[in-house]
Length: 430
Image (cartoon, rainbow, N blue to C red; front, side, top):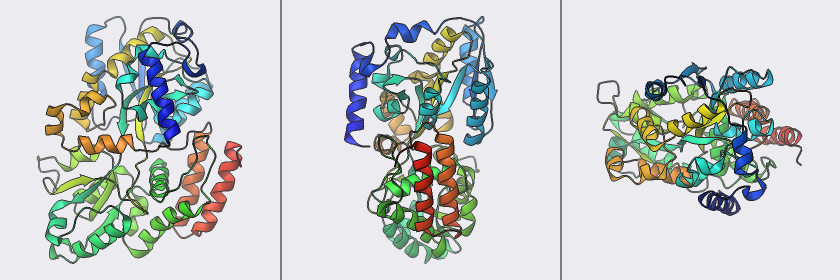
């Protein structure tokens, strides 16, 4: 992340810690609080709960709030579908949705369109969160969500096979290619491919493309939202992905992989390395017989094309629909649902990355989850995806052009030139 962004976040946290109203030109605490009135039943709207955490959190709240019950509205597992349903609810000004669990890249779009309500910074203890996660919840220095989970990608690798081949976890794509050649020469690795990521035409492709570009020294958009994809650095990143498929380093069916397919390929012993979020750790380490690679894998930082890799910043914030009723209840529920106790539950049940710094520093949790220090570094050094108002159209353009390049339907040069033109039109910046 650029230093100016880190300084901006530091300024925001300083203002929050001091309980300063209107920091950075934002509205006052009283103005933000005045719209948060009304008590009674509310809804909690989120994507499909693969880990089974959300019902536990809601049940704990409902037990002690008989007059302010929360009902869970579970949407699709597809981030694109979730966003579309939330947008449709906002465009019709429906009060059916109250608390929204939004992907951190939607904050700018939802805030700029006034689909979610500004929150008073000083009420949510954001100075105690990992700073990069706070940035994703801000729009024009105002708080519009509270980071509930984060995500930093890690490189999962077969430590048993790397040890037998006498190689260390790679720091670059070239090192990963060389490590794979040695591992695949082992009888135990017969038929294995090298690497799996998320390359189906969906949001995961935007994430993986951004990581390839950042890992090659480039950016997709700068801190002002100006696109920079028609550059030598972006081409180097995209070329690495294209060459990965052309050379067989990435399996041919990897073009269809989302997170679940990546996880299965790694756990079934089909790939040596995989790029994945921390929730893959709990699945791969299961000792109930469901994971053939339990005790046979470890994690390392992502490798980059030109040096150490850079994760895209994942995660979700809790926001309040501008059209909802009972917003005072929603505020209290968000405080409850984002508290360290609930973040610990998400970590324990689903390996969902916390946003509270104290959990990363907890010796007991570090002993239980040895990857936590690595995950914290991944999140602290992560780069956000494009923070633009028309994010849905921007990510569609990225997916369309990158997917075409991976399938050989466009050259890297043509894909990036087309993408640059489309992003300039969507962002109004040339």
